[in-house]
Amino acid sequence: MANSSVYANVTVVGASPVGLFVACELALHGVSVIVLERDADADSVWKKGLLGSRGMYKPALEAFYRRGLLTDLLYHEKSHSPGFQYAGHFGGQLLNANAVDFSRFKYHLPGPTFLPAKTTIASIECELSQRATERGISRVEDEGDEVTVWADNQIFRSKWLVACDGGKSFIRKAAGFQFTGTDSELTCYIAVCDVDRPELLGKGMKPTDAGMYIVSGPRHLYVMDFDTTFDRSQTVTKEHLEQVLQRVSGTSIKIEALELVSTFTDRCKQATQYRKGRILLAGDSAHIHSPLGAQGLTTGIADAFNLGWKLASIVKGYASADLLDTYQRERQPEGAWTLDWSRS
Image 1: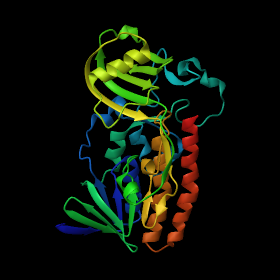
Image 2 (image 1 turned 120 degrees about the vertical axis):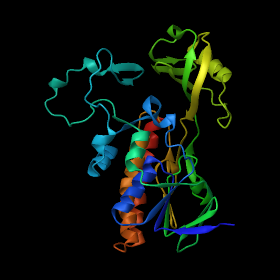
Image 3 (image 1 turned 30 degrees about the vertical axis):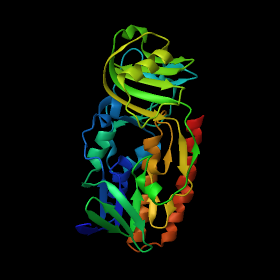
């Protein structure tokens, strides 16, 4: 039985960059909001450095710029690295940003020319965090005039709930949103590890008949496997990753130590609707796709930027709930386009 009850105008589930941006937008307009987050580890290694690095394109850059946050989020955009500077690829051919004479182009917008602007999940959360209540959601109900969430030994009531709890969203599933799309065609591994003969792998991107691997830095390895039979709910062992790496690379390389590993796929799925009653979806809760191409953060922040002021206007009585129909009309096609882009 719950011990206490907390009320706010809006409950945001998930203290991700998207969830925190929604919360900050609501607070900016004087709307009371509470953020519920299951993971209390704000210092996770997956949010920092190379592993936490994310790219941002124009919609996210504009959103952070308008809120005065952009300068603090970007890191070393104007720095120049000598030699080969990766700027993407075309048909597997790597592009070198240092091989382009930008003085040829008389007019161009300020900002990154090839790559998306660089930031980290940790830096975004640090800038946006006000206060996230560390809770694991156990139950949610839309009762018509308000939404009730049960988390640990507390009840949280609000007029609206925004689900920003990721691709495996509990809220999306509990509320019965349809989530449709295409299944994965590859399994990807991100690892921090030591190998016995790194010269066998070389550096950069290496496509093979079995997949592809990328050596992105010392001890940092990405392996993309065309085999999709691995059960991602299971722990990735050193032995399993070694077998995958050997098969994909076509070498007899050995993994001597495995410090960290995570997996992702290229599944592309989207909620058929972003609103159901008083529950709304944003970010990965509404759409999932491969992280390759750095589209996810930008799409999610654009969702939050679109939704925040609209929901605040409704809570404050400046607009009717019909305004939320524009959130669906404007953001759902953008999510669908991102999924199509990712599939290509």
